[in-house]
Image 1 (spheres, rainbow, N blue to C red):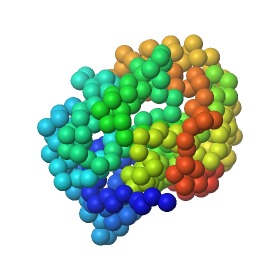
Image 2 (image 1 turned 30 degrees about the vertical axis):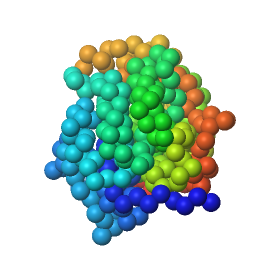
Image 3 (image 1 turned 90 degrees about the vertical axis):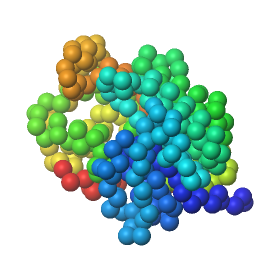
Image 4 (image 1 turned 135 degrees about the vertical axis):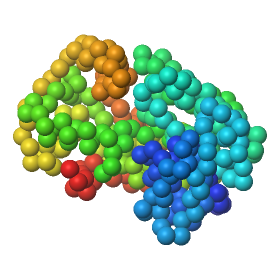
Length: 306
């Protein structure tokens, strides 16, 4: 069995996001020095589960600015790109962040001879998708691999965990409304991945020599319909609600109207993502190939503090 890569310092970009914070905590708990590259380093707080001896250094970095990336990477022997954008605003576009930003980081890692790079993408990234968000994710993967073919790509399904926006938002809706609208008939299949498992996969991808150049699709232990996820949240809340199927034409119209608001509650890309299944492909490498047994949403739901 090949020996693990010895990683001493990792630069994590997007380290203040939901997944990024979990990655920082996991790496720090493994005794790895972590440099958190963000645009507002003064706002970085050490994750509570990182351990009292964790070495976490916030530094300024913007994936759109290659000089800042070079400074943030200096002295590191690995990097993680966990930067993600879900709503475009002004100069923050999917192209600028997921494509050019990812390529900028890959170029700087190559120039500095960074030994291992992990790029976080998502299941279903597709160059031919109707969704600009999904297309940009796929282009980002291609651009990164063009520069650094040995980059490890991790593509998780929708993430969950006690501090997530996914399950907590559903819980808020269920708590307040007697009728809960569903995307279509609610039968699209999802394979939610526990955020802690994806952070563990990131550590494994950094240290396992066999992971170089591979793409892993990360889905949790359970494949659930959207309707079933709503039912599980209702059970956890002890609420009985009417689930109302709404045609996607209605959701498309709502998303188009919401786009005119300063803070859109729903976007076209979010609707597009719900029009199909989001599960691990039959022939894809997965958690199992990294030696990880993923946890199921049903097992983590009791830990939520709704």
